[in-house]
Amino acid sequence: MSSVPHEMPIASARPKRLPLLIQEAPANPGLRLRTVLSAPLACAAAIATHLLIANQQPAFETRVYTIFLGGALAIVAAIAALRPAFLRNWVREMFPIVGAAALLLTVWEVITTGFRLLPMPYFPSPAGVISAMVSDRGLLFDSTWHSLILLLSGYALGVAVALVTGICIGWFGQARYWGMPILKIVGPIPATAWVPLAMVVSPSATFSAVVLIALAVWFPVTMLTASGISNTRKSYLDVARTLGASRSYLIFRVAIPAAMPSIFLGLFMGLGASFLTLIVAETVGVKSGLGWYVSWAQGWAEYGKVYGALVLMAAFFSTIMTLLFKARDRVLVWQKGAIKW
Amino acid sequence: MVAADPQPSVSEGFSLRVERVSKSFPVPSSNSDHAIALDSISLTLDAGELVSIVGPSGCGKSTLLRLIAGLDAPSSGGLWIGQDPILEPSADRGVVFQDPNLFPWLTVAQNVEAGLVARGVLKEKRSEVAEYIRLVGLEAFADAYPHHLSGGMAQRAALVRALINHPKVLLLDEPLGALDAFTRMRMQDEVLRLWEARGTTMLFVTHDIDEAIYMSDRIVIMTPRPGRIERIIDVPLDRPRQRSSPKFLQLRGEILDLLHFSGSEQEEPAAAL
Image (cartoon, rainbow over all chains, first blue to last red):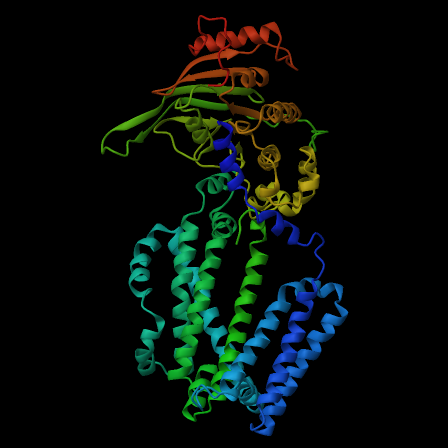
């Protein structure tokens, strides 16, 4: 009698599926066939779909897209066939995603070229986008270059000023007293809200764009630098003082390194704000760059170019973001293992 | 383990004089009230002496150490190292806190050389860094970041970080308080060895009576509210000391008596306060 209520819950509570899951996980992390074949098969499917559907498209468009997909197929097939040791982890992590991307292109093509479900010319096929990118590569490259220059100048200016103001506000009581109100009132205004004023006041559109981007970056970087500096653990400062530290040592070798994790948070937030401001500034004022290109192409109803520029923008911004992550990993290497990012 | 001191063993300690020092803090909830942390403390350490301060929490022992370090200013009274009054923190007075407080963004070696960098003498003395790291057996961890160290290793690094400046007085604020019993006893020997090799004057705050008797020439017993010196006891035992010798245990009993901790029972009272 008494043993039943004891056994029952235990038996029913045992997770029946768990052993199966454990068995399924590969003991030796080799590559599974499924993973290896995912990307090449998806690319092949994309090509097959394209050749099947795109029989009334312009020849140039079809050729460019076929070459593009064929190139992708050749690369992933070669990697799948050879599986070089240095690419093992990359294959394991990225092949399913590459495959999914190829399938997404296929679906897109089926919807646009295949069944014509979306109104033209607003939704071109992937072939249309890629061929637009190829045919207009000169201008696209030029626009990307101008955007890069503008972004970097604005970002660098904003960060440089923000580090100085942030460190001052974080460290000196006087600077905090006078600086905080300005920061709190001016800071939250989105930089793009200054556009009308900037267009009236500034000598050139490029100059005002740089200033606006810098302003957008300045607020989060200043805020987080100041908070990082003023939250430096007092015991670190005490220890440094008993080691004979001067004030400059306390600021530059204790407070700033201690504030670095917080400063990087500000740098990331500032980078996001700078992308937004860059594109707005290029759309309304500056006569170059990717933001300008998008609105220009849209004016001509060349939506293939619009999407091409968006694709480029995505690649451009995520590359810059990745570089900032790499810089963070480098500077904050001392945190590795201590905290999870 | 400590092999040999990098410096020839000349005594580098200075005397320390604390004269009628009081310290009070404003009470946060009131405008005029002040809590008295230290009430007219007078204490003199001879050059090269190792003195412990024991007492229950709230007796102001850490406050006194912060005053000697120059991190806080006394409300009244004065403090001197040799002939020089203590006005602000300086490399003269090294401090080791209970928390090692290693800078997490610096490697062990960089932490140890921090004092040299702060004083701008790294170039001349860079060769010493490796010797000090060897002194506490952390060679293998010289390039590791602090969060990879155990508590004992971190505290050893903190110890040599303070010692590399050749302080005239070394202040230790419960430096071994967070360590397990075995690591703690090993570290006590290391501190003693460094002390004997260097002749640095040391003031050692602890709440462990055994530790105080094992290590110090004299023991200052403080009582709380307000923080006062109850008694200063000489420890007339030969070194190295036996923790279980009758004299050791007798002294221990006397100190527990002074602190009103020896019950009427035979039962051992807790040594740690």
